[in-house]
Length: 77
Image (tube, rainbow, N blue to C red; front, side):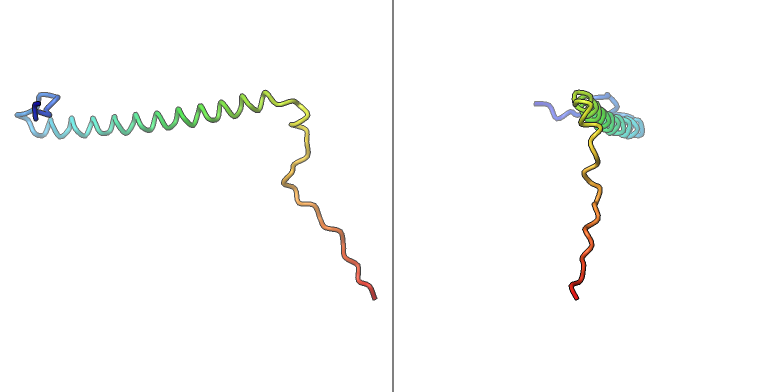
């Protein structure tokens, strides 16, 4: 097996090799960022799609997170 990892053929020019390696790493990071954005977009699209499948009555229900006031306590004198 060969130990030659110079895929770009830049064995003589070290500055070009450094620039090429940095460019490759930036493109790899941009690919990861694009993949992350696509996954978030698919998750949001799936959530919206599931929300559209729900009946309209479920969208008109009162908010379950509203705190109701407790009945007042009366003192027995």
